[in-house]
Amino acid sequence: MKAHASDDDIANVVRMVEALAYRAHIIAGVERTVVACVGEERGEAHSLQHLESVSGVERVMPVLRSFKLASREVRPEGSRIIVGGVEIGGPRLTVIAGPCAVESADQVNGAADGVKLGGAHLLRGGAYKPRTSPYSFQGMEDEGLILLEEAGRRVGLPVVTEIMDAHDIDEVAEHADMLQVGARNSQNFSLLRRLGKCRKPILLKRGMSTRLEEFLMAAEYILSAGNPNVVLCERGIRTFETATRNTLDLNAVPLLKEWTHLPVIVDPSHGTGIWSLVAPMALASIAAGADGLLIEVHPDPRAALSDGPQQLKPARFAQLMKSLEPLAAAVGRTL
Image 1 (spheres, one colour):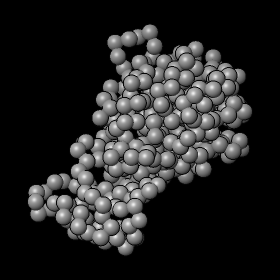
Image 2 (cartoon, rainbow, N blue to C red):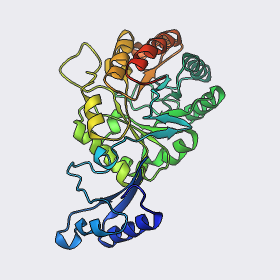
Image 3 (spheres, rainbow, N blue to C red):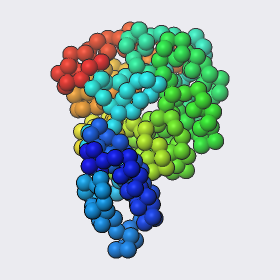
Image 4 (cartoon, helix red, strand yellow):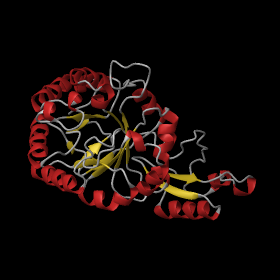
């Protein structure tokens, strides 16, 4: 639409688009509004090109990429996602930190105190844990969800936790400010569609063997179902290398920033699996253009019930946050 198109102009275009059997998604930008028209191409009778002559329309532009709503073409300035009052994608880098799993009230409260003191903006913790082995710790489930919420509210941090099953969306959304889709569910399309009908922001992790276009098509499932609040997370991919848990693909960060308007953060904890590598890869992620970080922090990693070797102690997390400050300034961001 033109920069100063009226609400009536926009509403009229939406009516015309829907009359041609497309779904209209209104994307309000800083300077102008885009009406994204999603649907199957049906030939000349359903062409949208004639809308260029309609009041308020600047131009009709086909989005050639397979991911339509996620494409930067529809929102060149980039999206900013608000999670419990915290902005992701703006000039300030966003750090989400906390334990891999909620294990007890003392543990999650100790982690919450540590990440708050260190300067984190959101608290993360797994209540429901997808594990490779059925005999591994599966999380505290509903009890863990409540403990995480209480810890976050006590220290004043919005909370992020993983959703594994579409049947649990309402329950998890009641207690969490952001719902995380883990690597193993990144192409669980029925779950993604259901999350598209949820109003809470979604943190979508890249799958272990997911190509970037497939990653963005997963985001497209959520966007096309009506939820525009998606943040992407690079967390490492599976390659032939076994020295680290995964291969952290930092190529993905600048390329995703070219392709999509969605914010991109990096998880160097899962990306490496080794606590001593978390800080250098976190710094590299910010230098590559990431909008933020997802860092695992535990009061006593040696006693952790899951992923202890990749979790930082609170003091080391505080050191990492301090080391980020000059780098943030160097790339034109703040903490």
